[in-house]
Amino acid sequence: MNCDRIFKELEALFPEYMDILEQACLFESPTADKAGVDAASYYIAEVAKKKGFDIEVFPQPVSGDVIGILMNGDVDAKQLVYSGHTDTVHPKGLFPAPVVRREGDRMYGPGTLDCKGGVVAALMAMDALKRCGYRKRPLALWLMPDEETSSVQSGKATINYIVDRAKGSVAFLNLEGGNYGKALVARKGILRYELTVHGVAGHSSQCPDYANAVTEAAHKIIELEKLKDIRGLTCNCGVIHGGTVGNSVAAECKFIADIRFSTLAERDEAIAIVKRVAETVYIPRCHTEVREVSYRPPMEATKENYALLDKINRISEAVGLPTMEPKQGIGGSDAAYSTIAGIPTLDSIGYTGADCHSVKEYVNMSSVLLAAKYFAAVAEYIED
Image (spheres, rainbow, N blue to C red):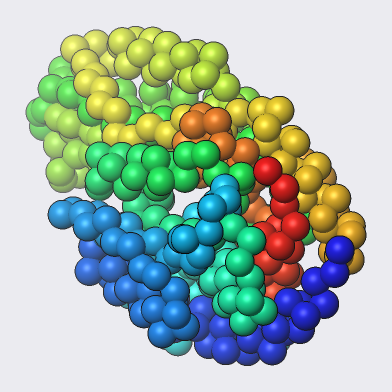
């Protein structure tokens, strides 16, 4: 096996694609902002179209549109799928100016690591392969618009469309950032609940006569926050809104509980815990309503995912790339859905950085090149 020509093409393309990544991240694209997400996705699609790739669009009324960047659609072989999301988590304007900046090997900005860096790496791999006359199998790069909210905006239509188009593929490579020398064969699922606590309002000078919803919520938050098994159940209560003024007993308090779980059995355990905490009354005359905000299943480790990692490691060793160890991720991703569909799936290959979901997010630019080499080598040598 030899990828020397492809790797040289990638190294030549690297500066151009770092400029493409910077521009893609300058389009701030929080999930709920359809215009922002579409701006980022259509920018990447326009770059791909100018390079001769076919474009497929699945329009959406609320979320951003799904965009497919396709290559070799006329080749009769199992396709290889790359999939990454272009939505980010923070509202526009939260990142300090300049929104995207480079310092040494690092590029800082929204989506650099999570996960526009992966999208750009996959497109760079496809570009290098095309320049080398690649015709072995169809390739598809899907741009997912509402991953960060578990596809709430589209009612799961977006991820269901991508997985349906990917069925029968030789592999599904999800493009999240990861850790050097590791690939994810499993990830946690996510349950997100909104708990609304109702109390009894009154003057704060007579607080013993009323029921403070904020206090009731505090008891529930403390109970849920006991879930801290990094390999199993975790809970983070990261948003809370309650009360109106300081001299009134709060009539209502809402908070969001983000629960992560590794298996469907743990999911059922989490549901039971939330039900119990909601029904437990700590402050007399309070009561609580529970609403599921979003759900993403776990990506459970399968023999197909392990077999795919073995294939990729054999290819990597043969072409001079580092081999990778299997790892279970503690966050969720769309790789869960392709795994459930029976498609051999790996996540978080090759590129690294830190502090995603924060204003300090950055990607190591050299690792984007490494990821592109993995993606290209897999396309070149993977067997059905």
